[in-house]
View (cartoon, rainbow, N blue to C red):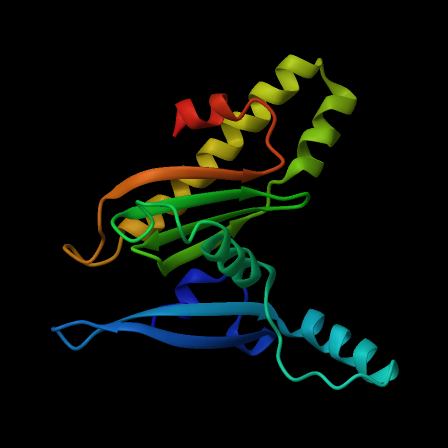
Length: 178
């Protein structure tokens, strides 16, 4: 059970759920773990309760993006044939998904979004700020893929395509670095 090694906070401070994606021949399993800070989840639950709303399920932004991507790209001829990496740049974070033949294998969020670029532009020349931001973003994606590739040998399929989405000016720069 590697979850504690993958998150920066103690498990008792987190709310998590695990879905088994595949059982491996050696008795191990590939799982999708969704993790949220308990304090944040409880805060939103209390807000809903105060508004008289009954919460039936909590879906994280990453799951919603993944499902939306599948729906939007269901006719993409290579979606069911290869492993894709979806890099979705949002305002406060960038989410990285590894999708193998339509199935989510791995996802991780890096705390670098467009807001970081905006902050940099305020204090530096625009071109320099963008270059630094894109370098750090590419590093965060590379670090995430390194974590994904640290799985047992033979269980990690080769990546066939990288798909960029979200707000990403000069996307070709990031694409070249990946």
